[in-house]
Length: 216
Image (cartoon, rainbow, N blue to C red; front, side, top):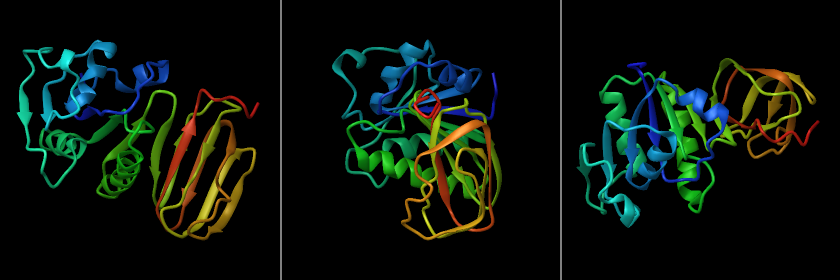
């Protein structure tokens, strides 16, 4: 087991894909409120269960009796997911996988997960957000390579103006590109295999759909 990789089980939808299983293999787990429902599906026992438990299904309430619970009041200044991440960091996390972080019924939570992941990446944490079928990785100044199947879709929404953006091994490559904030130019690209990114300045996220091969 990796002592510095933590998977945070969040309340969004989670598909049990091979990429998800490979990503979380050998990690440690912390569940945030209703995200505990993913533990049984993954066949794991988290080391901690945090939250106000307002979204925990009744059938889960008595499950996992051996997992320590850390309850918080509903009127708190952080989401259950952020509390779970803080616990993981206190326990030595260097790589954080936010499972169940994308999509779902709460678009406000999904957006916050993306923004929070960028902040954590700026602090030096290795980040992956996943729903199993969709993945997100922060893109900051520097370089990044993502192993994506040929024909799979990906997008690069900018959270600021982007300068010096390079995208290589994609159907629509870019070189030293300036992306104004709010532009849709980097939405819906197609991987030709592992895609390489580099950025001179700005903040962005790479959203990939590795099982969506509609670009073939």
